[in-house]
Image (cartoon, rainbow, N blue to C red; front, top):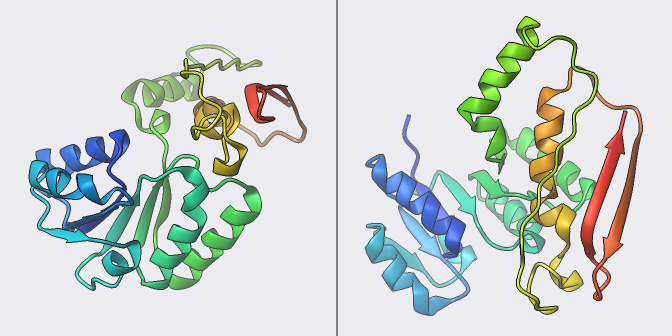
Length: 215
């Protein structure tokens, strides 16, 4: 079954999604973004036939089956709710929402509507990760007692950008922490009963470094 995709956003990761759809001969049907100047070039590059000025306009298109949300994660909650209200399946970039409370709400909305709501989390779809889990389940690597997952990236100094701005839900945990936590959970055979987190704050108050220990 093929889906007609709408893309919200034209940033780096949106380009990767659009390129992947095109490579599989299933180009996106529509695109919208806050930066209107990029829309025409984006649509032409990835053979997308429809350009919409607003998210509301795109979601009102009844030919769109699913939307890919590639905007900063502080916008995801509202966009997901709008998409589900228009009966669209949703694939949202990580972090899918900025809190468990937000996620609980949109998950229930999707379940009640019979719609698919997924987070675009790369590691759990990597062949290497799947093979490692097979080996663990087979007992080939022995009994796994400790999982230590470390991940980091360099961000240019700019207190106003989304990585460091608290108004944009900045901070290490929400930006890239999902990679480490999801990778760890992927290999666990039971749900942790306790979790403790610590962080080193950036000057804006968001976490520049974050550590979570669970057992």
